[in-house]
Length: 132
Image 1: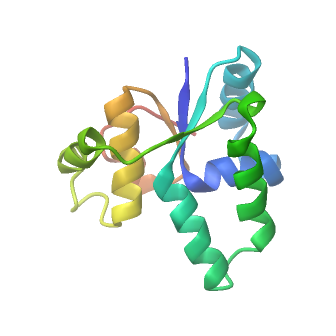
Image 2: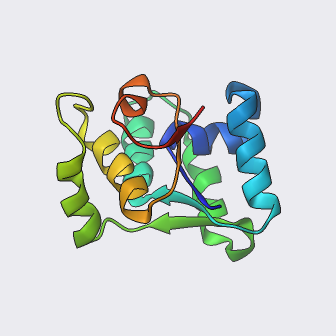
């Protein structure tokens, strides 16, 4: 089964897999090994650009992710923020998940009907299938 990766999960998988839980790392590796897509939301790219601009993460994180999503053999696919995903944001409670990028990532997983790999406790509390 394909997966949706939260921003931190995608970056950690690519650069610091030891930061992932064993369960998350094994599920990502299993999915990639089967040739099934690993989705990231387009908002994750925007979020990384913002974090690089603020000096919170190294540019290498963004560059690595961009190289991977441009490589068709990588297994990474970018899920665009479509009208359907935009509408699915309403199904992610702002009271539970207050940050809009997190709501969009969660809505992406809901719309695609896929588990979301995330360490974020607020997203995990949103009632979606999550892996950590």
